[in-house]
Amino acid sequence: MLPPLDLRDVSEKLSSHLRPWHRSFQFWVRAIDIYTGYKAFQVRASFEKDVQKQEAMWERQHELAADKIYAMCTDLGGFFLKIAQILGKPDLAPAAWVRKLVTLCDQAPATPFHTVKIVLEKELGQSVDDMFERFDMEPLGSASIGQVHKARLRGDKNDVVVKVQHPGVQDLMMTDIHNLQAFALYMQKTDIKFDLYSVTKEMEKQIGYEFDFIREAGAMERIRKFLYENNKRTPVLVPRVIPDMVSRRVLVMEYIDGIPILNLGDEIAKRGINPGGKAAAAAKQKILKSLTLAYGQMILKSGFFHADPHPGNILICKGSEVALLDYGQVKDLPEQLRLGYASLVLAIADSDPTRASESYRELGIDTLSKCENEQQEMLRLAETMFDTKLPPGVVMLQPFSEGSSIKKIAVKAFPEELFSVLRTVHLLRGLSVGLGINYSCAEQWRTIAEEALYHAGRSKGKDANPRARRRGLIKRLFWRDK
Image (cartoon, rainbow, N blue to C red; front, side, top):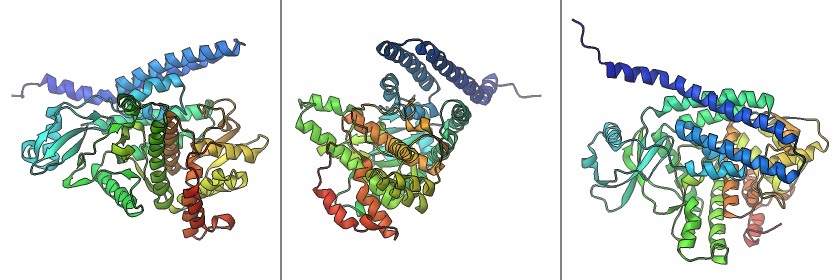
């Protein structure tokens, strides 16, 4: 006699099998709606000759699209929360998008505690009660890959953070990425002359790494050791991994007390500090200076760096110290790219178009241009992609606007491995815009870049004495207005 059919089990398996198809359908329906909405609007806007009225029309269109993008990211979650983090930056997306998407940093749906408990006990081989004296059932935050809980180990007086991966999230995120790759291929053939497909391939590789918490723990310890050994005082705090409490889906680390950088303005106001006063300005400058120094050292000196400095991963601690969280996305640049990028940093810092063009070739960035002043446009393109400074009078950079260098110079090939550097610089620019500070990371990284080339035997002329340049850098006012 056949066993009775478990209809609930059949339903769950069928739902699991069809879910990727359903997500793909949902993505394409919504993406096409947003895209065709903009294309139709462009035609309508072209008939309006009054500039102010046209700008008002664009603002309304951006608000409409922002609502649709927000709904898509919220409903689908997963990888689309990562997309929201990339797009929700003041320097890259319209202001209406930013206002909507910036709130999605740590608001993914949480996995129920009973499921978290099962994952913990399976991965670490002990019961939650045996391992922890206290374990907060409500997570501190839930992001696209996993969620974090505050807890305290038995026999210890210090709190820890327990990061637990959402079950089944990997397959869904890979489906999302493949859909985005197809959309990127279409966009680069029709609207944007940039190698978007290579960018999405690098995203696929980097996000794939995020599902291995053992790898993340190793990266966290490596960066922590590098920053502590190369500075008298580390520019950013890095959590310490708790030994023997790491698996592929669970990571236990020290708890660092601080406030999210997005809440900095509220905290300043709560303490009765004038947001426009000297004390607030000094705190913001210290925060950005710490992040800039840490990233300059990681990218140019080590080549191994934290590649995800979005606001949800940055805490502000006592004394305006900065803590950098979440090491799921790290990048280990090959030597040639590290040194090629160091050369490009110097080209940007010195406004040297010839060196910028040479650095493009060394980095493997293949461009096509028919515009006048090609080398000068190449330098402008480098500044757009790889520097944080905004031009005088510009409050928001729109890389894909009609007058931008990307519209004048087609980027036919862009090394996948450079995308992490590109994204990191753009996230730093977004933070600087949010803090109200306009500065050039290339200028601040000049000495580190010179030292990298010097130690590789590639210094020439004015680059040959980085120690003297470092002394000059220390004496120079960090946030100067040019």
